[in-house]
View 1 (cartoon, rainbow, N blue to C red):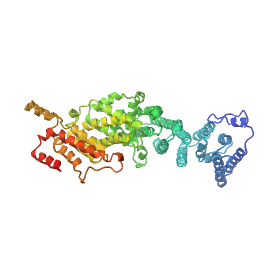
View 2 (cartoon, rainbow, N blue to C red):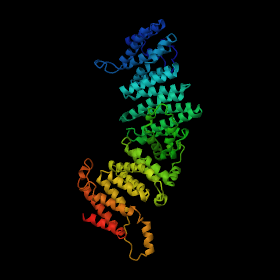
View 3 (cartoon, rainbow, N blue to C red):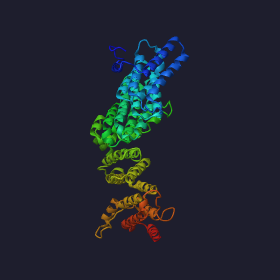
View 4 (cartoon, rainbow, N blue to C red):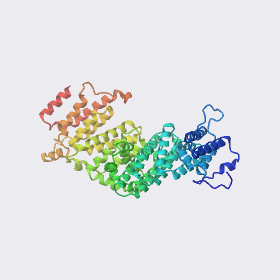
Amino acid sequence: MSADASPAPGGIDLGRVHLQDPSPSPFSLRLKEALDSCSQFFETGDFGKSDTAVAAVVGLLNSIVEPPLSDSESPAPCERASEEALVEIQSFLSSPSSDQMAVDALSLELPKVVAKFAALSDRCREIAGSIIDFLVSSCSPRDMLSILCEAIDTHIRESKEQTYFILLLGGLSKVLDRTQRRHVEQVKVAIPVILKVLNVISSEPDDEDKDSLNDLFGAAISIGTSIQAICEKMVGRRQEELRAILGLYVLQNMALISKSTQSHIVSSCCSLVLQFSKFLPFCELSYFGLITGCAVASITDEVSKEDGDDFMACFSFAMSGATLAVIWGHISDEIANAAGEQLISVLNKIRNDCTVRWRAIGMFKYILSSIDYPWEIKSHGVELLLCMMEGINSEVSSDNHTDFSSFMPSLFSALQAVERIMIGTSDASLRKKAYSALKKVVSDIPSSHRFDILRALITNSNSPSMIAILIDLVKEDIPREVRPSDMSEDNDIIHRQNRNIGSPFWSSHALEIVELILKPPKGGPPPLPEHSEPEKQTAPVSSQQIHCVKFIQSGSYLYEHWSQEFKQKMRKMTLK
């Protein structure tokens, strides 16, 4: 190519490499010959040989980017030969003399192999990107969507090299920009493949290549921008469906970023989360709707189920993403502002409505119980939970509520998740915060249901230390002061009412807790776990018994007011 040759589409100067060394390498000559043969066979209509010629071109490219392992003299791809090969491909594609059928045939295979060159050098990445851009601009968007999705799916089975996918996802974003019809269907084809890559790569521990991971999610943000641009041009039912799909896509990405294995995840990923948060207002997703789970249910209903559950399966972390979106807003005011939210207003609404609060508490189970999210994220989650529970008068707000039973499963799961934090973390400050959260959530449960929750937590725990803590929570709710001798009878009645004396929980239920620990249903002493706390195999039994004794002692005032039947039962159990 002459020195005054004009740049090819994409801004790449095809003469640049040749100017550095005017004599082409033998490999470059072989590749040019294979490309010319390919074009010639298509021109003459010899399609049998044309397929062979396309395969020969792909084979030559693969031989450069994946040299044989036995070649000890050149174990790694040659950067100069790789650049020459890519320039030769670009030159052929952009040449007016090249047969269009040959270009179309090569476009089916080139994205898979060209993407491999991107990891070799910045220059190779630049040229490879230009080739993909040319194919996107010259081929049918529908065809290129399928080709790029297939290339991504192939690479994810062969390699976790992030640079491959950055290039291919960038191409997908541009393909979506060019789609003219059946937009929702095209997006539904692309998103599962995109999210699969992001899920796999974000789970790979590679702290040294965090810049590439950020670039990968940057490409995912570009795809989100393309979907938003499409959505803005649509109207009616299909627009609402695409808006809902974008919302689920954003929440899934929030979750994937948050489960990244990068160290110092907050400082590393804040900018990415901020960019994704900018989509939330367009998707009509508020922090209030996200933290209560209502928004996710709403947008899920908007997505057509005509394709079955396969498409919706790619949003498996969307519910986690809803809670995480608010947690990130708690972490950074900038992120909350990007989402168009004032978090303090959202928290006040939650504090003032017990049913909303119970729904929001239940949402934390997705984050706190998962092993996918780092302790740093969980710590911020516990902090948000504590903020949500500040200044709540639980007795006034929830004791007379008549429909609490529907919230019990999710609250129970959330409490179990907080228990796992207390047991699993080595951070004393996080353990302390989790304990405070446990106490606040338990106290927010109506007293008529509190026993059922606590009994379930005790019977489902295999940690003696945790059981002792739960017993202590029960003990704290029993009046610890014996009525003063000078208290009038009227004041005594008021005192007992204020302490919930006489309710089912503070009579037979309290006794059931004691009997459950001192006299296990299966008999024998309180069971010891086989796989946890091995160094404390004897101490927990003593701890449980001490708490039970204190528990009984704390109920001495109740004992004076219980019926004769309960007195006899207490004596019988104590003697045993």
